[in-house]
Structure formats: structure tokens, C-alpha cells
Image (cartoon, rainbow over all chains, first blue to last red; front, top):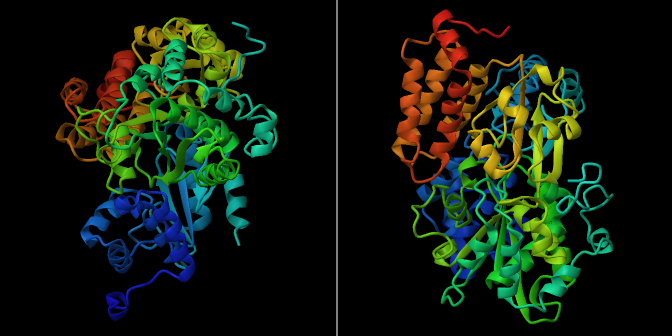
Length: 167
Length: 426
């Protein structure tokens, strides 16, 4: 029986399923729960960059955990997006070292260039702009992260150039 | 101390091109120390590390060899070695360079450490944002398995060690060792009550050693040249080298590995290109990550970068993140930014921290914005006292220390803000 099909829940692709096998192997078989965080990371990549209620329910079934147990973890960590984000998740560090190096000007340049404010997603769904806490690249401040990639030693001009070059 | 050619133990390879790959690591003598160590007894390795005097480089500064010796020799449960690569203390970015430029040094250090404490399984807990870094480490782990440095029968010596990466997902509190273990077990990262300490009851209930990246990456160097040699570097009670991440208002921000005990002024002027606008333009330095109390310029004139000297100056060495503020900075504003961070990162488990970090952020922000009330400064001080030492983990203290420290060092700026509704810094 496959309840997820009945409920029209999303499902991992065969390639993703292969990845989950590799993930489970990292932990002792009696502690499969430990794989929850990497499985959530994988689910977020597989299902459009965020974890919808349906995805959380699917992961719960997949891990043999209750949905609330999965939601508890998904909602604790900031990198799991519980709301849809744009194709490019632009996260600007504004913590102390970046702030000292004028990260405010980076945020301003992005708001102007993307025509959205911090916390918003552009109408075409391309960009979400967020302020984040220290990303650990303080000696190259100011910096930001777009999806997986760090961009460091920024200036307002450079930021506009980086955005312009995105496919 | 030889300033012209500082000893490089952790950063010895990072300037080579492709330093993250196995061939380059082997060319520099990599994994030779491991072969040497596997001929010793685990007890001898722990003794050597004790002799080195190295203290944990993650922030707490606990002697590593002593930590290892707490692990019970005969445990019915498996023992674990966990590397804390959840580098998150604002201002700190040294471990990132080890992860992305010399992952094999960390792996060799972990195999040696696992052998010393009798662990057959280890994890590297890397903060989730470090994408390139975690991929490099995973690739290095694969290379190490392929060459027999990891697995069932390391270098044919019958020693076993399995190693994997576990990615975090954005929670500062997971840098706290028991929160990290919770997170590694697939739960939300809320710290555990201690005791029991991880050395007795850690990952999945087994005895567990948790060490910082820089600490573990120092181990091959210590075992290669000897604990006594390492103990001869630096100063008494702060032996060896330390990587300082110098950020903020200096001309050349960067990570620098130097001997412990270097003067802060020498670190800033000889390594970081000096304070922006010159030494006289210095307002203060946060010497050990955002949770360490700020030092005034007067204190910066003489303080040395070792555990005891910074403690005597009223702050702490912490993670070695040196954040430099020049005279253009409003200390109240800087503190408001720092306090906002701790409010965001409190895990919510303990009331004093959950509520207190919110109140502190609110009051500091109010003062900064010109809405400060008479008694606000005293209220902040009282709050700090009601948080410190009253929570399960040190996050509460970490949030209170910069507040108490900034008021202690720059009280007149807070008073001016409250009285005039604006800043004295233009």
C-alpha cells in the first residue's frame, strides 16, 4: 500500500532515492532518524526549494516519523524554507563584521535593483531577498549568499553586476 | 617569537594551489604522522597531546588532552568522535579555510584523535551554509577511504574508523556541543542538561569527544614534532599557535595563524595592515567573537592575545575572532545589532535566555533609536545578571556578556543616548 499516492503527495525521484540510500549509510542502522536533516535538505532541493506541508508529510512517511516530529525540526532551522522562495534566494549577511563594512549599502542596492524589500519575493518569482545572520566569511565582508554560492568582498556596484549576470 | 617567519601548523598548506586535494597533501608529508602514530599506544598519544598543552580552539579553551582522558577506556557502548565545524560565532571564519583548503589535515587529525580515544565512528558537523566546504570535505573523505586511511583496516594496522559529514541547517546554538549532538541525532538543536557530560553520555548515549576543527587540525602537527615542541610555542597556559580572524575596520582583514601571546596591537598592525585611519582612530576591539566583551583602545594598547591576558583585561579569547571598530562606530548601534542576533538565535528552551535576549535587544534598540528611558541602562545591567549562569547552555551568557561589557567600557555613550535621544558619534 502506498498512501502517499492516494493522497497525491510528492515523491522522491529514483535518483533522489539513491541519494537517500547513501545518506542512511552514514548512520548506524538503529539510528535512522539521524538522517532526517540531510533528507530534509534533499527534499528541499528536489521539491522546488521549500518544504510545503505535503513535502513534510511525505518525508514523515518516508522516515517513519510523525509529521509533527518532522515539522518540529523543519521549523527550528532557518535554512529549511517553510514558505516558497524565489528561484534565487539572495541572503545578505548584516551581522557585526559585515555591518561594520557597510552591509547596509548592499541591502539598499539590492532593494533598488530587485525592486523588492527585505523579506519579499519578486512578482516573477525570480528573487527572494533576505537578511541573514553571520555566514562565517567575516574577513571578506560584506558578503551574501545566492542559493549555494558565497559572494564576498562586495560593493553596491558589484552586487548589481552579480544580479545582472544570473541566468 | 619570530615575527618574520611565524610557525604555521594549521595553515601550513593552505597557500599551495589545489591544497585541498590528496596528491598535494601527500606531497607535503600528509598522512605520514598517522602511520607513525598507529605504532604507538592510544595512551601515549593522549599523553603527548596533554604535554602540548593545547586548549580547545572553539571558544571554551578546555585542555584537549584532559578532555580526551575523560573518555572511559572500557565502554559497553560505541565511542564517537565529533568535529564541531558549525562555525557560527559572528566574526569567526577560520575553520572555513581549513575545511575548504586543507580537509585532509582535519581528517588526519581526526583519525589520530579517534585512535587515541578508541572511537571507530566520527562525524564532521558542518554548518549548512558551507556548501563548497562540505563538498570538499566529502571529496577528501572519499579519497581517504580509497587510499585506506579510513575504513576497516587503516594502513593495514587493524584500526577502524568511519567518518561522515553531517550538515547543519542554520542554528547558531548547534555550535554548543550538546545541541550539536541533538542535531546530529536528527532533532531540533536544544542543548542538554549537563551532567552527564558528553564524555560519558554523548551521541546516542555513547562516550563522545567533541572538538573544534582548528583543534583537530593541530593534532598532526603536535604528533609530528612532539607535545614539548608545541608547548614551547606561545606562552604559558596558552601554548601553540592560534588562528585569528581579523575583521571590521582594518586595512587588510584576514585569517592569521600566529603564536599565542602576540600583542593585539602587533596582530593588527603587522598582520592586518593596521586600523583604518591609523591606531589613533581605533575605538575598540571585540577580541573573541561577538559574545566577548569589547575592549577600549586603552586596553588594546597593552593586551596580549592569550587566554589569561585577555581574561585579565575583562574579556575572553573565545574563538579568536577579532572585530575592530574605528571611531566612526556608535557602540550602542553595534550592540543593538549584536543583541538582535542573540534574540534570533536563542533556542527558547530556558526562560531567562528566551525572554531576556528579547528584552535586551528591545531596550538596546530603543536606546539607540532615541527612545531610551531613565533607568534603562540599569535595567539592562540587571537583566544581564538575571540571565548569566541561569540557563542550560552558555548562549544566555554569550548574549549578556557583550551588553554588560559595552556598558562597562562605553557607559558615557549609553548615557548620552538616553539623555539626548541621539548619538554622540557623528
